[in-house]
Length: 248
Image 1 (tube, rainbow, N blue to C red):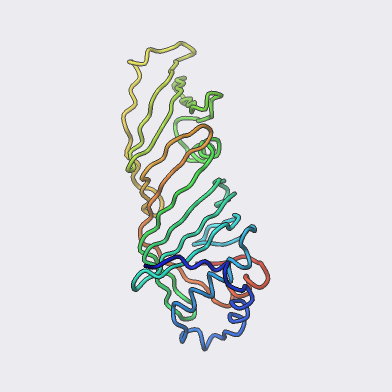
Image 2 (image 1 turned 90 degrees about the horizontal axis):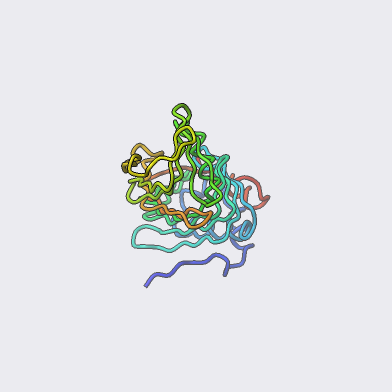
């Protein structure tokens, strides 16, 4: 039965020294297993428990790398990455566990990376999530109420709603606690909150679930097939010097 390969159990110098000996002419001769082992070993040995800076498909990422594991699953690989205190562009995420399924490496210059599917589990503060939603140009201005619920003020209709929300299979459901218009309390039966289908999400993402627990929102997201490329020499330099990792 296959088990995750944990690069922490390897000597960090072996991978870095091996990668330092690689030239552009030898990259295409590497087996994917060897290349994947050296990459995961080198990255975790250099950045494990430390802040990592990366450019990932055009987005800036800053986070603390906690876990990076790789295992072979038939003809492909499966990877598990755990990040904490993550900053994705300008958005703060408390923690993320990303499992990539059906990963393939195609050696070359540049080396290509493909994955059939991604499962992403994470937590974000309600405050950070509300801040991101307010940047979307919605008709409602959102804030976090002292109760932990979300307070929404309509920008033109003088309507204020205090509500909780959850997402299941891309369907957003609202539970209204209070509502007022021009400061006057409205009966709940006068306020309807139909479920909203969240389609057209970036990268064809699917939100399997999102629920609020106190001041945190826990979410599970599924992403379809994605691919990228990287320059092995740049990755080698990042491992040796601790600079930015780039996948484009």
